[in-house]
Length: 207
Length: 207
DNA sequence: CGGGGCTTGTGAATTCATTCACAAGTTAAA
DNA sequence: TTTAACTTGTGAATGAATTCACAAGCCCCG
Ligand SMILES: NC(=O)c1ccc[n+]([C@@H]2O[C@H](COP(=O)([O-])OP(=O)(O)OC[C@H]3O[C@@H](n4cnc5c(N)ncnc54)[C@H](O)[C@@H]3O)[C@@H](O)[C@H]2O)c1
Ligand SMILES: NC(=O)c1ccc[n+]([C@@H]2O[C@H](COP(=O)([O-])OP(=O)(O)OC[C@H]3O[C@@H](n4cnc5c(N)ncnc54)[C@H](O)[C@@H]3O)[C@@H](O)[C@H]2O)c1
Image (cartoon, rainbow over all chains, first blue to last red; front, side, top):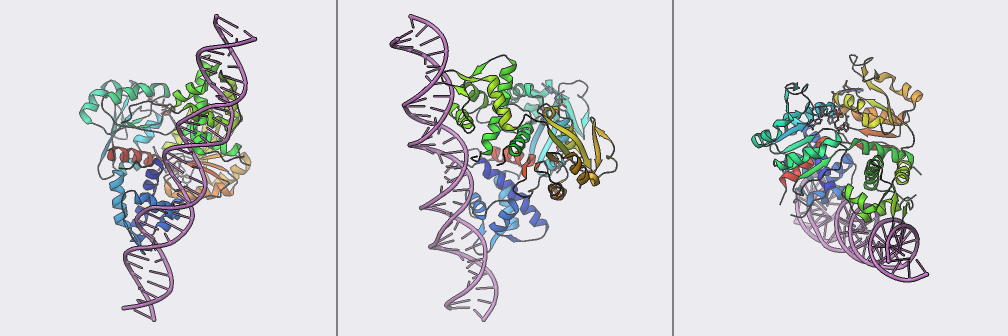
């Protein structure tokens, strides 16, 4: 299959959110134009994005809302439950553990891991905090699909090396660090400091 | 000035972080090649990125670490203190309020705002939580540069309209919503569900 | 059943971003 | 002073993403 750009996948994600909104409002069809207005893009972009995966619309009419939503869920792999663990039960780890937006989309948080004895054994909104020493053993047993990394920046690469060795293939990283891993491991980094600096740049360099 | 791509600004941010690391280790010069290895890019990319803003290196030698760091801070607008307020003193808002990575880079969090009477009047790690009803008045008075948006998705656009009307020109949004604002308002959205779906896609569509 | 009004799907054209490749400048050593 | 080894800065080449533009298909109305 042709390689799909990251930006395309992000848009598909956005389209799905809008479709779900339309679905709850009981609308049954939608045009690429409407979808585009909603998502701040163009109708040609919407159609091109979808065209990588097939042709789901009806000319003259548009797309069936439930059908397209289903197709997008399938494309994005949202049919199944994904198993997720959090490493680093600190402030941001705790916020994420409690975030219902994840479970709602099929991301099931199994456990959190920490190296601080005060945190180990507690629960974060029903999610157990375990000893980081058990990490490899638990990964063998529970086979999580995704690791969410919320440890301090200078610990991040170590944790990556450990979980990659244990067989994890996808990591969502919140530490401000450039992580290295084999190509078959997908890593997405959310760097909030970088986003803020982007705003700083925008405020500074307006013509 | 020629329009600078978002991706370029993000890389500049990353270069600055590496340079600061080099600085603390006492190194005085660095080549584009070293900077590139560190950041997972190429030396040509580094030089091209910098070339949009001037020429800061010495042929045959590389870049002076402190000088280049200074130039990047200047380009990114990190010379000054930015004034930031948080709207939505919930779980993610609280985590951000306590995040030292922001203050450290000159982002000074003045206050948080909420509409929940139980939260108003409390403090988040020294930061006061104020009534959302005071928002416009306080913006007039305190002139924050940046608003961090951490309210539920369906409240987000309302808050945007209010702060934009009050004169705010930059917003960092964590709500999973497509926001609309005039072009002279910079908005960056961090959508964690989208990132997770990107991982889901990657795990699903590996050839 | 034919025509007008819409909307999709997609090659082609365009715009934008990255990589190449090399002249020109710097240093250090002989 | 000359030479060898490096490294920058930048046009030109390539590659990727977006936008254009239109034939082809569908629906509805008369
Ligand atoms: N708090 C925020 O809003 C925020 C925002 C952006 C980025 N981040 C980043 O997220 C990460 C965590 O930030 P935080 O504010 O939650 O910090 P925190 O100190 O509250 O949490 C870090 C947690 O990781 C644990 N930890 C440290 N080393 C570990 C290891 N080797 N193995 C397992 N657990 C370990 C600590 O015990 C702690 O509980 C940092 O990299 C930070 O830069 C945080
Ligand atoms: N918790 C997470 O890890 C996480 C992750 C990703 C995105 N988000 C997003 O961040 C936002 C906040 O999430 P949260 O988990 O912190 O939820 P939360 O319910 O803990 O916090 C939301 C806060 O906003 C306040 N609020 C609601 N409407 C308001 C209004 N009109 N004006 C002012 N304050 C208002 C509420 O009183 C509450 O304190 C949501 O949009 C959520 O989707 C959260």
